Image (cartoon, rainbow, N blue to C red; front, side, top):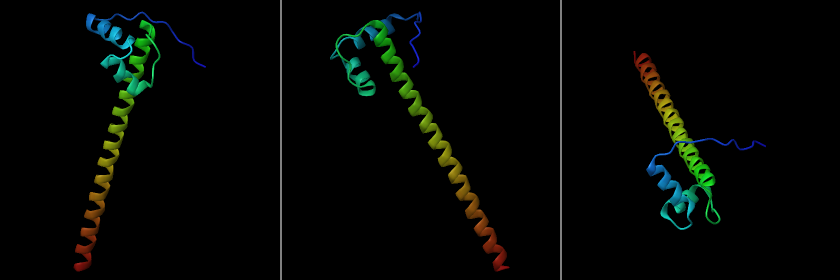
Length: 97
C-alpha cells in the first residue's frame, strides 16, 4: 500500500477559498467534488479537501487523455480508410485499362 506524503503547497487566496468551500457539506463546490470523488462525510480537513481536489484533477486529466487517444485513433482509422479507398480506386483504374 502506498502511504501518504505530506507536502507544503502555496495557495492563492482564490484557491484557499475553494478549499474552504469544498470542506463544507452542501456547498456547490463540495457537491461538484462529490460527483467525481463519491460521497464525502462531514466537514473535511484542509488536507483532505486538497486531496479530493487533486483526485478531481486526476480524473479530469484521465478523461482528457482518453479523448486525445480516441481522437488519434479516429484520425488514424480515417487515414487508413482513405488509403484503402484510394487503393480500390487505383485498382479499378488498372482493371479498366
